Image (cartoon, rainbow, N blue to C red; front, side):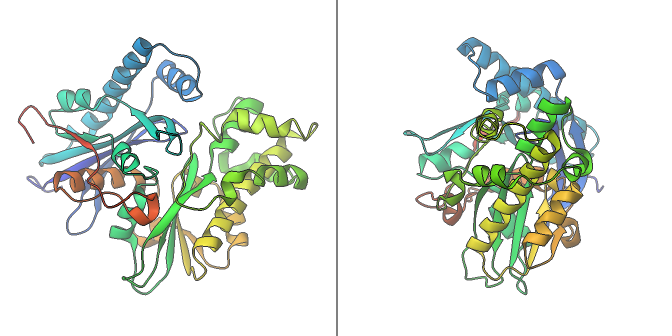
Length: 371
């Protein structure tokens, strides 16, 4: 690393809450990852976050305390990278931990906690956070926000690409080769969240390693049809969703109509749900896709990647083939969004989120030395 070089930190904790992804990046002339760190959530705090995200009742005092506790852990994650870097860190972009996301309500709302003032205070680095709410205030979904970063870094003039992020929820960014064509995208529905929830319920394990449990089962056609009949999948874009919608309760309600399905068959069917809903969304939005580049935790599930390849008529590959580590794309996006905010540039794409126009996103929490 070059001393004196300006860098940004991106912090991301997804719906799976398996840890905080922290990435240190240089953004000029092109994004270059300098260092990464995955910071664990303390188990007791993760349990509280999951209960809050599941909608369990909580006092306002309890929620405020949870916000501060999460902020301390985000600050710890950033400090690990800051302490190892000799150059100037311009800012931290923190996504926070989503507890609720309902942009379609009246009024629309989305809540990410992890007090950014604490991050700025503990690290001494300007921190930008709360990216989603301005887009929602402008009539948008507040999600997905990563397509703007995908467009800036992974668009290719010779190829129609789709960038597929498979976290708890899956989202796509459609990047036409034609530079004059708009970038589009949306949340397709469940990525890993239902498979993870079923593994926890049936095996007490956080996820299905390498998709082995799904591979041991068979798709249950009637259950799959019940799952795919949810109106979210047929709803037009722009749209976004979360694990507060595709929740364990959502799954249990539908399983009740199909008693006696073997646990491994449920897992195989949930994998098929993710693959088929993603593939259908890509076909609907991009008829001439030449390549799908995948990032997020789902890229490490070979059964899911195979199912996607079989459902699509184009190569399905990791973003690593385009020079970007799939595990750190989303965290890097929030570092990029922080820079957009500091430069007074929009961070949303109205064709993706449905907002009334481009908006500068996020709230800035200056370091003790100012912005």
